Length: 298
Image 1 (spheres, rainbow, N blue to C red):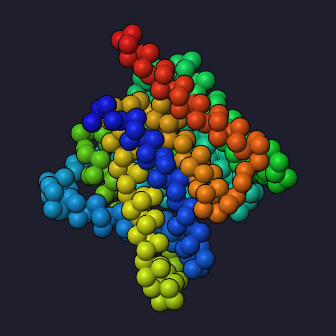
Image 2: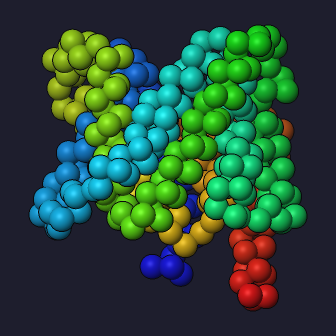
């Protein structure tokens, strides 16, 4: 599995990048952002729970002393991140919120250095700079006239921190020997418990009554293709790649979102958008070449 680790991380980013397909459909049904988070979690818990039940029931077992890891991935890494991200969008614009969110790899590297002894190498810094610059160009924030308030900046950076802490807490859980399936099951189970307080289930039921199979197909799609599968792939790949590189490699997500927009919705990005895509793809090449070079030296 180790030789496929990079492919797992990149594939996870691609799956996350496809989420816009399902969000567009569900938004048209009147489903709100936090309802999406809760629905995604429900599908993930059901699917992963069934896998654990039929594959290996012993994977349900966790040490209660390690519950903080799963609280971190679920409550901080999913609920807090989403609340901060959606609030930032309300405070400013989608493009500005996207840029603030993709400060996450910066926080991952800074946090992972003292906690896990990961080196902040020149290769990582170059790849990080390329990925972040690419995100800025892809988002169109340079052409955005929105005013960023202090509140919006702080909450937006909070989204980046929350996104980064998912990786950090997941690393602790992996180090304690838990499987990717166990981590994801308890991540989404705890996220669902807290998310229930922010979810209007009546509105979800109304959307189902109005659209039936289309609603179910979109919910299953977002829960399986853009939640369960990528989270499992990402966490599995993390076993063999350090946090810093993992977070940079996952930045293929916005590139995928742009490509989906072009192919499906005919949303043609500007020249700066295409340059941004090139920078983000270049970051993946740089970080992969750098990791290969380091492995040869060791």
